Length: 627
Image (cartoon, rainbow, N blue to C red):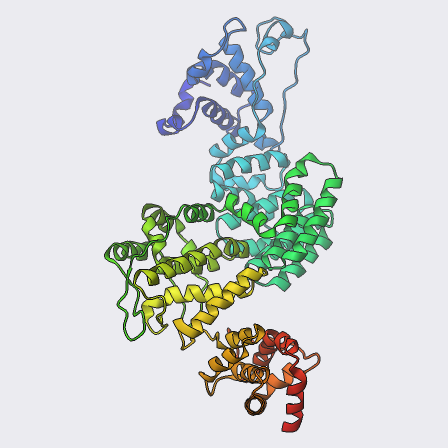
């Protein structure tokens, strides 16, 4: 073979390769076309110095001729090249004895000749990469089920993943799982890699189909991987029960799989069951630590972090793997102090609409061009905007370029709704609270700037809804907090909503305010607020009756309670029942007036207050008299 045979390597290909890669590709190409060992090695020995001139210049002439160096390199390439003609096995050349004639043809003993040259490190995965770059893609399927070393193939896949060659990974691995045969445990790691590749390529149908195939045709380890993927997919879809069942099946299929501990903890946190996640993390950390395996150090460390703070542990992983969330978190931390960029024209005791000034208005025009907004309807607090994450780079870049946008209620509202759509509870719990707190500070600053702190800020003005929606969200989230200070701050803001900001109470806070005032020993004030909402719904009527009873206004309390028992009987029956059955959710948002679900929700929220006020006996007697 002569140097003319290199013409098939066009100039662009040669320029795009480093010298070593060029030699590997040339060598692999010769073997693919049928060259035997000596022929392929001879080509590298003869032309290596010319093709890899920079490499040749680094050689020490005292060690030996450059031709010998490249011959040794050629032998290393042959020994580490998966051979297509032999099921992609390695067909290593025999190593000569120290006193045997050297393979280079010098007639000297091997120990006195090429044995002195340094061994050239070349990995089988590197040679396979060169081979596949020459092989037509339609022939890649010949690797499936072959005798190729699985570690070599997996190493190559890691290389391609690092180069973002995910389509190539899919094309290489898909043939391994075609047909009807069993999926062997030996191929389980390749199976898991292909499933993860479908995640990166956003191919949910292929991912689900392959996972189901693994469950149907896989040996135990492969079957366990299939169930693990189903568990993750069900969790992503919010189907916590189905996810848990799939995890149980994964544990049955492959109980010794240590990854199941991480998966179980992950799914528990995703489902919002942080307490159980901490318990299971502690169990798995102890179990893995007993194995005394250094390779498990990172897993054990993460599990211990979960025991201390599940949300923070999950957020740590998210920062590492989700650049957009890491960027948003960094931008939020660097956001400028709140500043007023809104104009108000107070009228009739109201702030009027919040109008952005010219500077903020121009910035918002840019924002609306790059951000896919999705405002909720009516008084809903979120639409769980997933579309915002289709291309977050543009709006994150704009936030970086125009930090003024951090002083926009519209932008803060968009970001909170987008975080709801991100799908990870720990991301919401980490990033939504500071956004809501920033909203509160900005809101107070705007009102103070325009001397409007005591005025109404009504929901009827559409321009005010982003700010009010975020403040209402702060109320709801604060009420669910385990921190007494946060709960008290949430109640104070809710009270302000009803008393001052939006007395029309579009978000339905009034019953909670009346009940909260009763609990805080302010029954008279509670009665006064309740009186402003005549002909109201069940929650207000029952809570008004309680407030009147605690305030000692027995005649009015009796009248309101009897009215509530008569007009909203399911609420009274459920409230007074010893152990009522929780109704099944009908799948719709909210609840139907007069339904069993409405009654159950009232019991869940207000039963502790009725018990605390020792008022259930009083209501029970009235219910009997009504009958």
